[in-house]
Amino acid sequence: MTADFHHALLTGYERLAAWSAVLDRINVFPVADGDTGRNLMITLAPLRNVADQGPEKTGHQILFAARGNSGNIAARFVYDLLAANGVKTLYQCAQTGAQNARSAISRPRAGTMLTVIDAFAEAIADLPDPKNPQSGLKTVTDAMQAAVDSSTGQIRELSAAKVVDAGALGMFVFLESFFTDFCGQGRRFLPIHEIFTGRLKIDPDYAAAAENGFCVDAVVEVNKEPGAGAQEPSAAEDHDSLTVFHTGGYAKIHLHTADRSAARKQLGQMGRIVSWNEDDMAEQAAAFRLPAAAAPVHVVTDAAGSISRHLAGLLGITLLESYVTVGERCIPETCLDPEELYKAMRRGVRASTSQASDFERHQHYARLLSQHDRVLYLCVGSVYTGNYQAAMDWKAENDPEDRFWVIDTGAASGRLAAIAAATARYAAGAQSADRVPAFAKHIIERCGEYIFLDELKYLAAGGRMSKTGAFFGDMLHMKPVISPLSHGAEKVGIVRNAEAQIKFAEQRLQQDINHARHPLLLLEYSDNRQWVAGPVKERIAALFPEAEILLQPMSMTSGVHIGPGAWAISWCRDNPRADNPQNPLHVHES
Image (cartoon, rainbow, N blue to C red; front, side, top):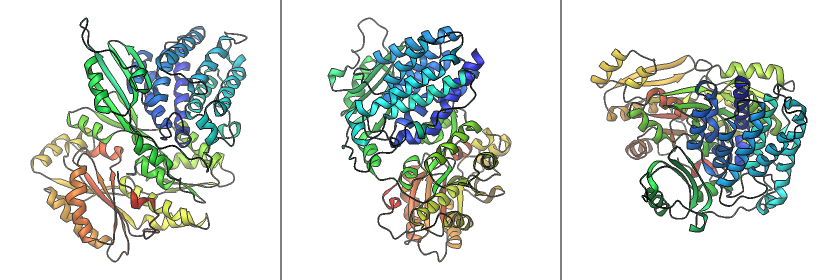
């Protein structure tokens, strides 16, 4: 039971991850801010390690990791679901989880994730043969499907946008995948794009309301002394979307507030604030209202490229996740705050990266082909990962119509980002789908990158050089410059200080992009954004006044390997439609 149960939970998470981008695009309730998929991925990512660390530890990690309204509801339900140790207890735990999820939220609404959770719990309680759960598989999935179907008519915003509720759909994908696998039916899942056809894309006439305030997730170690601290927040105190639950002396609190300072002060009176995450809902809602880029070919690339989740959304690019583990916490790469990573690394906390499983990646490919006529996957170089071969193997078995195109770019990090950004721009204006992969192949050799390391000890920590070599290199202030090429990362220089790094970049760029009319330059930062955005950008802009310069966080995969203090500059000599004032890249910096 245990191994099968854990495998089924992982299956549920990985299929949810593949549909997370769709959840973000239809997320109009309770706030039209496009983060439901992201929040569910962050919240449930600890399930990737449930087989190794056990259900109790995983459950607590999920509670503390929970983000957003949907994530906190899902966390409370899955926490109880993890306690199941047999078929009979699965039913009991689902009932308990459904009750606790509903009681954790101050203003439960019909037509949301809660309705799907209730449908699941009620349906499995009424199975015809409790010892044989597959006997009721169709009954359970039909009940959950009906709950998602009903969401459009139950919530005004969903009806206006002509979509199903994002949280309800996310929980359906998770539970349908989990229960199908648990019942021993392999991985024969319902076709989401068919059963909810016409309600997975927002109506073009829908106008989302402007939002303001902050979405806060906090963990508080509650004061233990009698009478100490303050009363926890309540819905009556102008806190919307409030969820609160307690575990082991801690309170996990999610709320929306117009005054984050006052909210932090109030939570601080309850006890010690262990963690605090906030999202600016005005910024998120503004980005959500921007129209998605349309093109005859949908561009996909790996998150290991230095392209942010927000910029990818503006360009209409799908990012395929890798995962970063910081200490014991596992986070999808594009969902990790760079500041959190680099602060932890400077404290000596171990950080590592891992690829998504083949199953998760295959679910992405299938989902993309269900929604797009043509898909172009610009894959990280095969010398760095096995992603290219995995994609080609899947294509050979599942793409008889040749709609899924895969290119081994030979690139990683910022160079991959430059290739993807230029290709997506070109695709948006392309008259023919066939021209897009031809352009991508052409552009690969016209893009490059220089990565400037600060300390070698992080390479040594990852096993990429000896600790002795790193020690003496740092002692002598040796700062290598590397370029990710098709045959691997190549050392192209050594400098001794920050000024020498900038001069190296200036000299090399004068050779690399000389005579390019409007080159695209990406400046990538680690924990040194202010310096890169200031002196570095000023010097580069003065040298190349015709260039378009974007500021982007370095990919977390690169950051884990080369550490804080690093920065990079990547370029593309050909910059499609650089003169177009409507180009989304003109208005974005991260």
